[in-house]
Length: 73
Image (cartoon, rainbow, N blue to C red):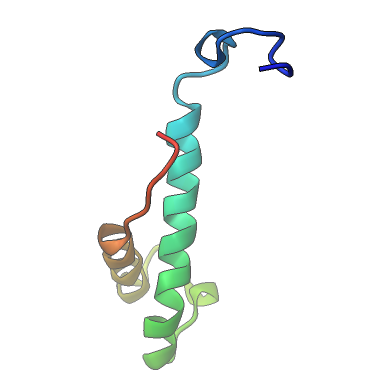
């Protein structure tokens, strides 16, 4: 509260979407981390990703859909 000058944290301004963006970045980071093992077992790497590689894309979507964490939003 001292750093906020005694203001209520909800009244400090900023973008309402910021927590959602923060959580989205974490969700993607966790999903990408979760794909490393399964991709390695098929002889692929995240570095091999391109928009035409359906196998890697499918694995990333699977990881996103099965990830769960408590975010700030």
